[in-house]
Amino acid sequence: MKIATFNINNVNRRLPNLLAWLKSAKPDIVCLQELKAEQAAFPAKEIKKAGYRAAWVGQKSWNGVAILSRRHEIHVTRNRLPGDPADTQSRYVEAAINGIMIGCIYLPNGNPQPGPKFDYKLAWFERLIRHARFLKKTGAPVALIGDYNVVPTDFDIYPTKSWNDDALLQPESRAAFQRLLKQGWTDALRALYPDKPMYTFWDYMRHRWERDAGLRLDYFLLSPDLSKKLIKGGVDRAVRGKEGASDHAPAWIELRK
Image 1 (cartoon, one colour):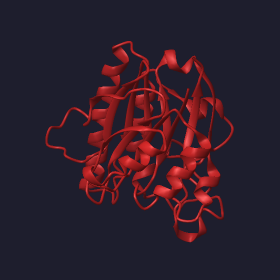
Image 2: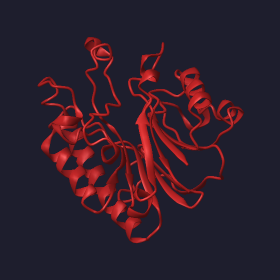
Image 3: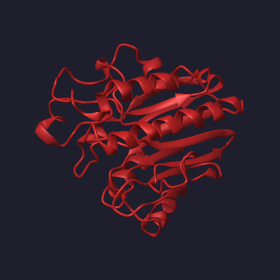
Image 4: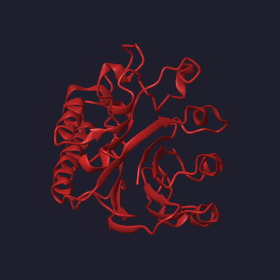
C-alpha cells in the first residue's frame, strides 16, 4: 500500500499539478493539506474522474484538509481535532481505510512568534499529543500524516540562521514533536533515511528551490504495528520544480500487506 502526503497550497489553483502527480505516482491513499477552498469548492468531480474517492474539510481562503483513496472506501471518524469545541479552523480529518486509521494533519504555522498565533500552534500541538495517545491506546493500526509545520532538528533544514526566529524552529515546537514521538510513533522517512535531510518544502522566496534550500515539514508517524510493515518511501522532489507548483513536494511511503 502506497500512502502519500502533499501540501497542495490551493487545490484548485494547483489541480493540474495534483492530477498529473496522481496519474504518475498512483498512491493508494493521499493526505492533502492547505486546500484553501470552501467545502463546496473542492474539485470532487475531477478527483473522482482521476479514480479517487475523497473526504475533505474545507475552509474559505485558508487551511483545509482532505483524504483521497484509490482502492477502498473512506469511513470518516472525525473532521475536527478534539479538545477545543471553539476551534473552527479546518486542520484535521480522520478516517478508517482498509483497516488503517489515517489522521490527516495541517498543524498551525505559528508565525509571528511570540504572540497569539504561536500560542494557538502550541495549544493545537498539545491537543494532537493527547489525541495521538488515545489513538495509540486503541491498538488500531494508525498513521498520523501531514504537514506538522515543525523542523525537528537542524539536520531537517539547510545550513542557515535565517529561520532561527521562525515558529517552525522554536524550542517549544521541537519539544512538542519529540514528546509526540516518545509515545512510540515511528517517523517513517527518518527511519528509512537516517543520513539524508529529506526536504519536503522549499520557500518561493530567494531562489530557495534552485539552491535546494529546503526544510522537512511533512511526516508519516506510524504506530508500532504499521512501522513493522514499512518497506520504502521518498519525496517526489521533481513535482516541486513544475510550473505552478506548490511550495511543498509530495512525500510517500509503502507498507507491505
